[in-house]
Length: 329
Ligand code: PMV
Image 1 (tube, rainbow, N blue to C red):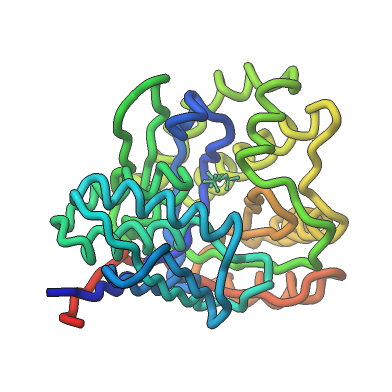
Image 2 (image 1 turned 30 degrees about the vertical axis):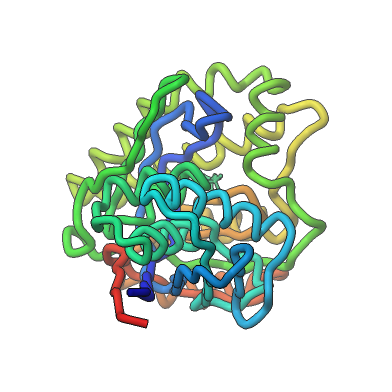
């Protein structure tokens, strides 16, 4: 019997950032990270194994994917096949809830949905820790997208066999909002794996970054458990800008921030001066995500939309767990 599995996973944004690998081969992070799952950005992925296929096939937002994108997906499927003792290839169909080409395409939601759907389609039990570990091998941030709410991924040790994220608090614990400012897309960014490798080998601040990161993750986690938005915002902003400072001190420099990114950082600082609770966080790209309260999210979004270089804004609530459904094909 053949089954088809459909999984849905949300993107997440790290409030305590992961930057650096303890073991590049096993894709284990060198630092602990803490994230919030984003309801507004999700990926839905359908997987069906088929003995008639001669290779894995991947379609993303109705476009056939070849090359590097297909290879990364096929590598995850190889792990699932090894675990399930199967040799069949799979047909993968994936859709993002946000526009393709917006630069928001998230490997986190993508690999989390793919891990869950492929494990279910291969007949493996739905074990969230196993799915998180599987997703982590493809993209460490994807390990966190298996869970909703607020999530932590510990640092790994070189050679460690498995590492899964674990939930800190469910979505219902705290109603906070994240406003995403999509900025104009600059030249193609350096991918996170290459960026981390370059930072680790050339930045004089890599050591201090590793040293400070556990304290930052603990600060972020405590602020979440205490529902303290000021403490959370300050720690999250400090983590993001420290990560970027560390990357910028690489040789040659690794600068992800663009003029519009910095304009958003400045706009948010001004909002704070006016008494608005808002703090920025930035991943390995030019977009800015602003952490705020439900009451102030509309004002933050309106203000960010007027910043030169901001193309659009997306307001998100805290997202739920990833889910998967199995149907007979
Ligand atoms: O999981 P990756 O390889 O896409 O790396 C994610 C790196 C950051 O987004 C910058 C930080 C994070 O913790 O998500």
